[in-house]
Length: 109
Image 1 (tube, one colour):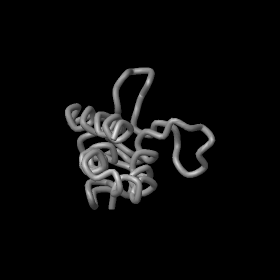
Image 2 (cartoon, helix red, strand yellow; image 1 turned 60 degrees about the horizontal axis):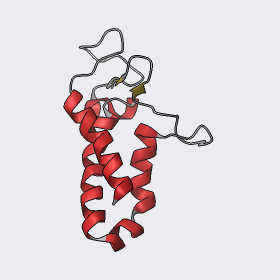
Image 3 (cartoon, helix red, strand yellow; image 1 turned 90 degrees about the horizontal axis):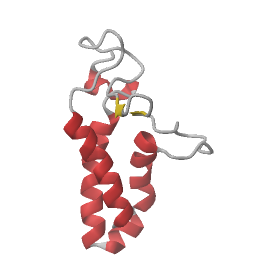
Image 4 (cartoon, helix red, strand yellow; image 1 turned 30 degrees about the horizontal axis):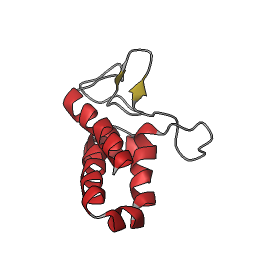
């Protein structure tokens, strides 16, 4: 069912959902560097899922959620949701921005 867990299994809303985890990890890593070192690879999996910059990565596509041509990100994954018959929608630009902000903060932690 494409709607189970907000479509997470179909790559829907990953940057929204994972962005919260990435942001929280950035805050913890900033204040507890030993935690950041211990869980670096775990958090990097979330980051690679939504914003992988490497074409050499065999596990995650480059910038899964980002549309560089149109300049924004898309929430819809592989399947169209009820409110997005064309497969493209961005219902929360603030959550998208927060996800990418979390990535930047994690990189500077």
